[in-house]
Image 1 (tube, one colour):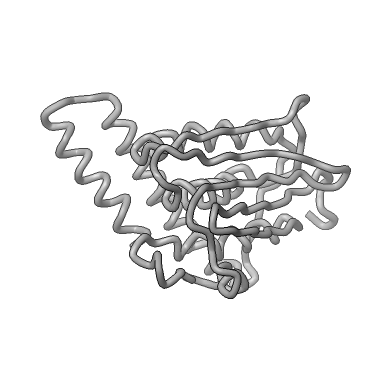
Image 2 (cartoon, rainbow, N blue to C red):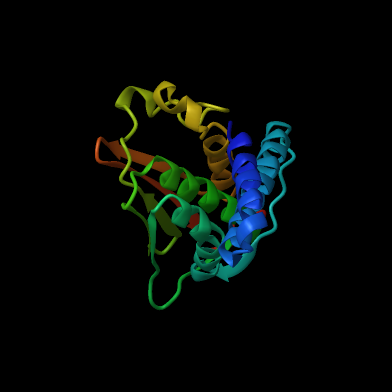
Amino acid sequence: QDLKEPMKDIIQTAEAMKASGNETDVEAIKSSVKVLEGYIKDINDQAKADQKNLTLRLDQLSIDVILDDARLVLQAQAKQRDIRLQFDSVNPPTLAFFDRERVMRVLSNLVGNAIKFSPKHSKVVVKVRSDQQFVYISVADSGPGIPEKQLGEIFDHFWQARETADQGAGIGLAIVKTIVEAHGGVVRVESQPSGTTFTFSLPRRRPVGA
């Protein structure tokens, strides 16, 4: 289902372009293709991790770099669903050691899910905070929340809540946990009926042995 949805978006948008030639439609297609590419990479990375063969490329970068990447990639998806994206960075920008391409996929999965499960005309908020050891990035939505009894299962491979199984969200959370923990960080979730917040951490110092 995760793969089918962006494919459906591509087909529908391409059909609309025949008549309109609207630049917005072009950006929607690009966004859907990027989502598909991310899912394929997620599956490959999870297979590598299962075989203890996942290698990261760590660079010391500003967190704002990855927030800007996410904003560009996800804006079209949010607009399609009438969701407003709000990115709250910190000033001065905070540096961390991370694999830019893979952490981008972590954000894409978390923000993409938040968009998918939020009601129309609501907003998804991405916030950053830090301490001496880690930078913490949180993604909060206004969706229906996750039942407490299911919170312990959500990072399992291909897990889906029964109530929302037709909407996907089965691929992303397992690889989110895998990528974050490969960086030496952790990912946590807090959920209420008024919304869910995922928070993950990235190291401010190069991990030992990296």
